[in-house]
Image (cartoon, rainbow, N blue to C red; front, side, top):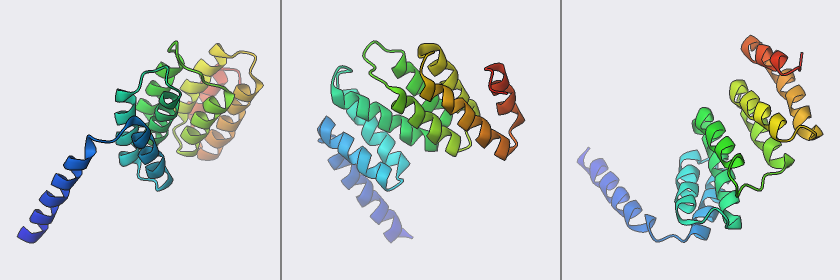
Length: 162
């Protein structure tokens, strides 16, 4: 048991010694690598380190923010929705239909219909003429029907999808 504790302490010490020296670009790359390995916590931590060091106008900021949201979808879908919508509402956000669809698709695949519908609702208000965002409501509806989620279907009905 003591050997395990020693190994854990040594591992934590090594982790702590290499955590603060990464550049924002390295943190974004580490986050992307972690996403690819489904290591959601490491991805979140790496992207959040990059976000803390990058100005919102930097093109890498968008990648870090969307990466953070992607990791959060797996860890805390409500926070993922909040982070995405806060970014979408910022003056520096450069989101397109693909970004909105990607977040809604991942939330829907995770069965987080309430969060996906929340993103959909704001997306429809911000981009009322965007047919791709409108189509996401249909995709969420199909998934909610398959899952038997009556709350989600009720919310979609309120948006005109039923």
